Amino acid sequence: QAVVTQEPSLTVSPGGTVTLTCGSGSGPVTSGHYPYWFQQKPGQAPRTLIYDTTKKHSWTPARFSGSLLGGKAALTLSGAQPEDEADYYCLLSYSGFHVFGTGTKVTVL
Amino acid sequence: EVRLVESGGGLVKPGGSLRLSCAASGFTFIYTMNWVRQAPGKGLEWVSSITSTSDYKYYADSVKGRFTISRDNAKNSLYLQMNSLRAEDTAVYYCVRDVLDWGQGTLVTVSS
Image (tube, rainbow over all chains, first blue to last red):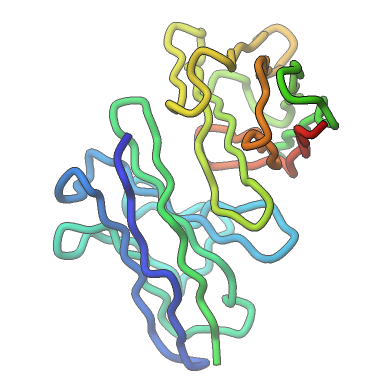
């Protein structure tokens, strides 16, 4: 099954902007991979932030947005808050099969 | 409110079996359902999916041939039968609705 890669860690200043990316080892990421993004804080279950590239869950703060960028899926956090410090995972779909990314630890500092 | 409650986790010896259940409520049980796991201190791993009428079932290579996903729409329940368990199957197992809504997980520990 495909390998999905993310930046291991990123740091953002409070109020700043950071972009996380999600790449596929089998070629460019497209809308046909229905990219998802999840947030997980220590000791908690993951929560879905973004699905189908750009769509937001009911609880997704407006400062999070999803897109395709340079052959990858991207999650942009604009106006970072201390509570956004967490692990973020992407997921890509391959005709019924799903593969999670390796995860990005975001530090707000 | 969508509610997914997993059960059936516990300690099992290598080579043993375990059946996980997920009780769903708060929505019409017509969605594709998934199992996702997370080993201690590790990332998320998709395990298996089943479509609304059980027509299609998908498995990660790591569990294919050992795990079986099923559902009972009359009982709003999802299941994962896990056989030939290995130490590397130790993880929290999450029930996930359509990759949108997550349960709190149940811990499976495979150890002698």
